[in-house]
Image 1 (cartoon, rainbow, N blue to C red):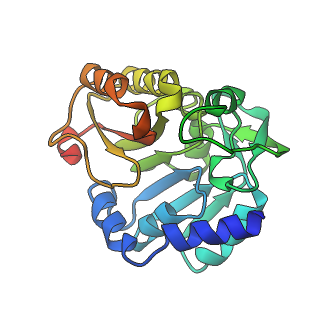
Image 2: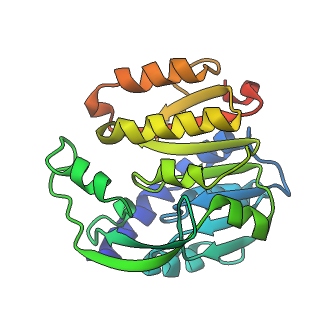
Length: 246
């Protein structure tokens, strides 16, 4: 079941028409020779885009089945694979697996509880579990260097991951869901505490900013709270140079 699900995701996320869209979007954040962190790599469409832009990539993906796929999809690229979870402090945590939909594996029991019975999340089952080491963004920076961009997509663990970052990098993104707005608001507050003042967002996989120019944290907070439930998910972007966000 998981192999079929991964194959389906590979076909969707690595579809040829998506590649120039991703590359044009992320080119505002990455230049050749830059370092990028892909936290929650899934099937590697973002890592592949970062690599096409000439960036070095640290791809953090804890699921063994996805890691095997990633080593094939990204072979020959300048990518370092890290088979760990990313959280607030080093240690261990349990990753709950969804074999029918590996993209929503999570280390957050609150995420699973929020998805239970929520519209758009019907039928999701977390039917496996593995215990894995947890690293932090600070530890990854100490080992690999300071990235120009960090993408964080860890299914309800985004705020925890950002707690493990003690200083701002030039730009980052974190996923949000409308079933866990509290996590998105906590992640936003952490970004603000790190010194970010410019924000924007994309809904779903649109790769198009929702706002024509960067907005501040208060405006982003209100936008997140006003989203209808059916918006489901997206990504918030934060940058030290707000001009990159419009």
